[in-house]
Image (cartoon, rainbow, N blue to C red; front, side):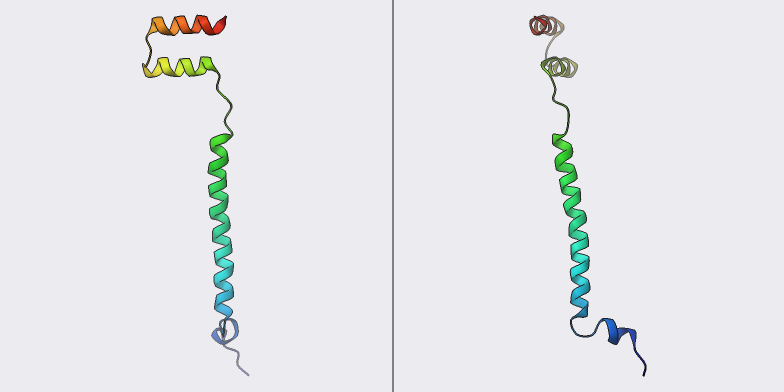
Length: 76
């Protein structure tokens, strides 16, 4: 008796099983990617006030005099 590939694996609702398997695999990768990016955002080291001050000075938001004044205040 000949067994045809199409008739054995994909007869009836067998294709639906494979659809479910692929859906679970793809959704697992999607969930991993989302959780990886979400945790990467919050796993950074906390910044202190001096780091924030240096960033503001580097962006040009404050001038050298303001930077020195605030830096001396922070170091007290």
